[in-house]
View 1 (cartoon, rainbow over the protein chains, first blue to last red):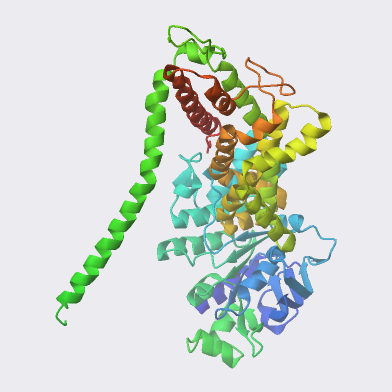
View 2 (cartoon, chains in turn purple, yellow):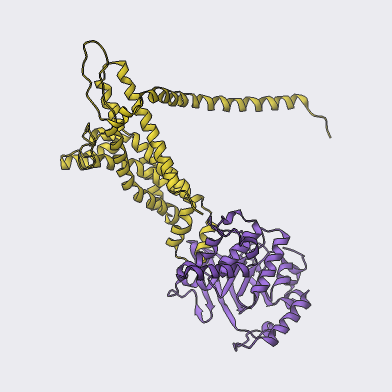
Length: 287
Length: 290
């Protein structure tokens, strides 16, 4: 399986024009695409508790990066830090920087509303609005003040990209809550990609879904790859191995705060991990 | 498998049955007075309803020598008065109550919010005459006037805590994940509340508003101290006005024959039906179009 991923990456590198950003660590030498986001010495506190500690990480443009690790290791918290969803929790404080292209998103001058238009998100449980299917997808597009036909085109295109168009084209005006769980999650993906964000964050998007729906979401991620930079948190190691280009492994340290243990191309992490803890985790010795 | 302990099994069954029958009996006991009152109002009231009763105004009954009941007119002015007074009260209470409820649910954390919550709970339990007295002291005493509008202010004081608390509770039922989804799409929080959270909670919020309206429409005490009663149709809220509760309260003294008492049941019936009709109208008008 990792062979497949490695081959695919080689092929991609050959065919993709170089963006010309310096490759920073040996692990990423295989891929010479730009870094869409960079996490630098990032820590996050809930009150006095340090939930994640000193994370350094580069997220490669147009690729799928998976965050794996046991429960409570801070991977979801880190993911939610990438579009500042943690701002909604009052006691949260952060240290360090997170760069989107070259802008530090924690700079006080950054408009968090604007940031989230560039960095969209799909959540653990499908959370469609109690509105029609059409209105769900159109929600993030309303501010663009498109004409009716433009709006309809964008909604249709997003639904197509989320592989949901054929399922729902005859009932766009019906409530989104009438869809099945897997369909709802694909609707949420359509909703997230409709405003054309540059980065899409996915927080365990398949954890509430059955295997068939999970497969569909993974196929969908593969389709979206290249067009969007995707970061996915997953509990499912097979999923990370199947559907990601890069993998970051997180664990809790002695102070119970999350740390990144290892990061690199998914093939390397799963076949030749550098850290003993990574190896133990991916071989199923704990977690 | 071990053999079933029959004695214990029977005992458990018995206790279960006793508990269940107790809840049923208690439910029935609670419902009996309710149905008696409603039923009596409907039976007595419906027979008092006539076009004459609904379309004319009050006439002071005359003493007749032969003992026959004289015509006491109708309640048109009181229906219009109640709709105007309670409607104006809703106009005052709705924006305040709704916004305060949104504040408590969406922004309200910390001591100030807890204090507001406590205060609204106390207010919603306070007797209605208190609201009347407050308005009497603040408005009636200072302006030396009794306006229908002052009655509306007093009723609004009673409505606000009900609207605040139901709005807060209903908004809290909207899943946090839905708010997150909206905010993650790059929408400011106020817009997320307005376009996603509030529409998702419309039904419940309307219920709260209708509860408050129903309470206000039936209140008598605050109106006694704040509004001069008129016995004819009035449309100016800055003047005297009749209302259904005041009609019942006042007419009680002036009626002479049992025949005439029927109008009281009629008025009670109309008051109940009015709340119901307004409720249905509001629901039809705001029915969620998905």
